Image (cartoon, rainbow, N blue to C red):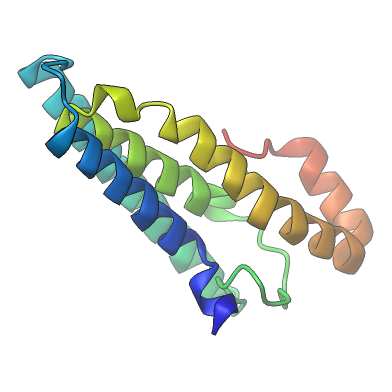
Length: 150
């Protein structure tokens, strides 16, 4: 049960809930400005969803798992994975930042680097360690050529 709770979407949902609570109960009259924040927030959320969809498509096309705690059958280096080793986590971060901007939750901005830190520690580092052990030379080349985030 715990391995299904310790998943990136659950961490994202928790961060979104904290941002919403901050916006709803502790706004203190702070804001980014209505038009720019709404537009940028919407673009970030939309971009995050597109990134995630492209990554899911590519992983399904290669018939490997998208679940972080499972062993990958193949090393996916095509499609969106040519640009980022972690497009799903990048999409999660973009959605969080986009919603913070959209909600005008100024005081929730520190949640973004905290979320990135948690994701790196809980998911990215263990995933990359498993990939490094399983795909040795191929992963070393991939790691050298493609950045972790962007």
